[in-house]
Image (tube, rainbow, N blue to C red; front, side):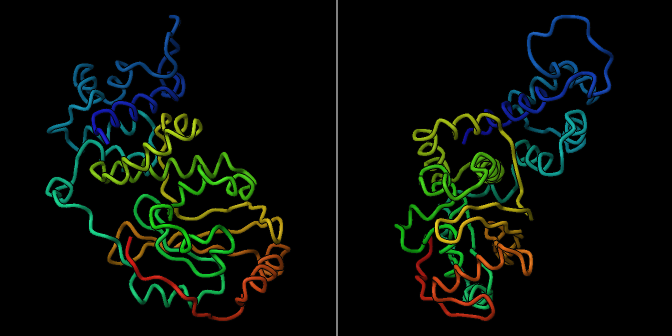
Length: 294
């Protein structure tokens, strides 16, 4: 990914969503040819020169201080995730600067497989670029059997945008798709030199008009918890709360667990799905799996 283009478009889209009134500026009687704030208004709010802000928005970030980035983040009313993304784009980490060798394959540690075994709820382990590294049988039955797919296709974003089953599965497919894109954008800020990410973005852009439109919005999202509404082809409607947990030792690996409200119709439907897959929602199980890294 081109870092200069990313920071330019990210800052442009952030200032386009804020009016002068929302930013606390006096109403401007002039006709505004672009939505949101002008670059000189952002510079004024951030307390920097117009030329300095223009250089920043053009991706010329060498030597930019954290204090300036904080001031720009406040001027643009960025949330914590957006602020972190701005810092990723503007101040590449020393680790990234030293990275020259290819990304090492991600491996799921045996303890994480045991964690999947012990869960009676649908669960999966997600890695870089939203790759699905492992899942328990109930997770596979809920979404898709990623372990049965070629390694290249074990990716949640590919599933959402390129698999017709995802359009039927998600009650609000547009939101699910937007969340995928925003998650990929956040990853792109951290790892712009990932060639498989570039390949994935190119593939999704080629085959999905919706992906291209959403990618141009430059929204970012860090999943932590939320609710998914699904319409499963076997058991019907499900409302599941999810939590995303970091995996120690690999910052690009997370454990995603989905649970229904106790004694709810969704809990009953999930129990039916578990019986259909030959698993249990009340005790551990030991699925067969591949251990090949991706």
